[in-house]
Length: 412
Image 1 (cartoon, rainbow, N blue to C red):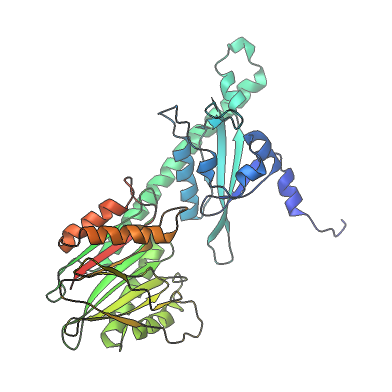
Image 2: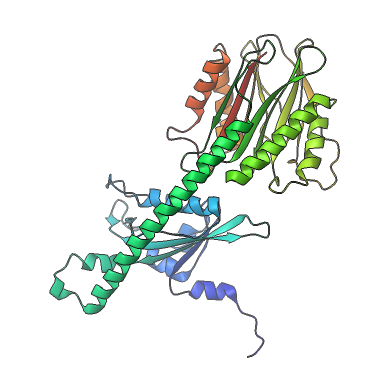
C-alpha cells in the first residue's frame, strides 16, 4: 500500500451520514456536506452558531421535547466523557425559506466526546440519521409498505426500546453518583455560622440538569491577632466525586495557610504550589480576603476568580478587582501574587461568589456583575440570610443555573 497522507478533512466532508462537530458551548465548529444538505442550512447559517439558536423547538407544539432531550444528552457527554446514544426523537425543523412553517421530522442521534491530551472534552461529535420517511410510513396502509420498510421499522423500534432502557439505567447510576458527590461536598463545606460578632450567610446551589455536582467551595476562618477573619471562595474545574475531592483538599489547604500567612497573597502562593501537584486542580480559581475589623481594612487577592463585592453603607458598590492574577496552578514556578487593600465602615457587606451566579451564555460577564451590584445595592438593608436568598432569586434563572453556584455574605 502506498504511503499516502490521508486528507481527513476531505473524509469528514464526504461522510455519508449527517455529522457535526460542536464545541463544549454547543456551538457548531464544523459540519459535513450531508449535514448541510439534509438540514437545509448553509454552512454560514451553521458554523459559529449556537445549536439551539439554529434549531429551536417548534413553538407551535407545546409537547415538543426534542431540544430538551438533545440538550440533556449533550450535557451528559460533557459531564461523563462518554458516548450517549439517544432513542428516536421527533424534532421539527423550521423551513429556512418560509419562516413560521415547520416540518415534522424524526431523527436518531448519537453524541460522542472528543478528548484532549488532558482527558477533557474539547469537542462533541454529533451524528444524526434522519428516519422521517420510515416513521411516516407507519401511518400508511400495511399493503402499501414494502418488506424493507417493515424490517427497518422493526429494527428501529427494537433499537429505540433498548436505548431507552440503557439510558435510563445510566441516568440512575449518574444520579446516585451525584447524590454521593453532593453529600461529600456538603460534609466538607463549613456550616453557616456567625464569624466572631459578624453575621454571615452561605449558599450552595448545584447546577440544574447536570448529572454531576461541580467543585465550588467557600470558607470562613478566624485569624489570629485581634478582630480578624478570613473569607474565601473557589472553583474547581470538573465534575462528580473527583471534583468534590479536589475541592475538599484545596479548601482545607487554604484554610490552614490563611491561619499562618502574612496576607491573602501569601496564602494563595502556598495554595498554588499545592494545587500544582494535585491531579484535577488544573485551572482551579480562588479569591480570598483578610478582614481586619479593628482597622476597618480588607486585604484581598484573587487567583483567576471573579472579584468580591463590597457594599458600603451609603449604597456604593466596590469591585475588589485590583489584585487579580492567574489561576492557582498556572505557573510551574509561582511568583508572589498581588494583593490590595480597601477600607470600610461598620455595617458594610462583603460578598464572595462563584461564576455560576453571574455568567450567562452569550453574555458579557460585565452584565452579570452589574446585575449583582444592583441587587446588593437595592437590598443592602436586609440581613445576610435574607439578602442571600434575594440575590439567588434575582440572579439565577427561574429554572436554575447550568453551573454550580456558591455564595457567601458577611456583614462587617
